[in-house]
Length: 207
View (cartoon, rainbow, N blue to C red):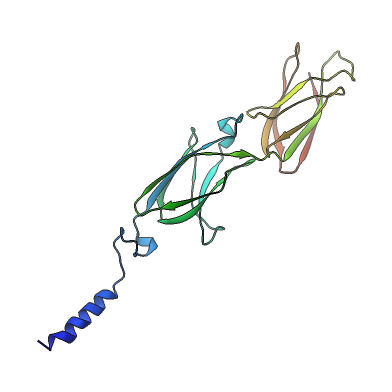
């Protein structure tokens, strides 16, 4: 019997040194654990159209290294997103989209789990400006007040002063502006690129 004791001890020691490989074992290496799924949706700020989110990207960043994007996904036409194959762990959820930001959020992804983040309501970052002069034909140059100027697909708008000048605060990105006044056909200026902190001068928008 005694001759078997060293062999039994050696066998038990060898078994204790074998790393856990069960994908459902929390002690298994992260790379071998059964991955999870993170899903949810994005909603634009109130007054903004969903197409403003067309280029949005949802990212999961490891808390141990927030500069590293571990997983990312784009959204569908209704604002939904799904990140599959997510290694279990804790992540920071970030949204990359021009002119908007998401409130900070973390998510814990369990082994072989599904996490629904619900709908993330974005906030507008209106730190860009468009200025210009809109004028009604046949009206005195100092009587141009009240022309309505709007960035289409957003709630951002302004009205002209007596000289026809307007200043519109918008989100960074690409905009189409429309100027309207009773009795006049609307005028639009498309593909206006505005960077954060920038002011773009459109000059004249004659109606």
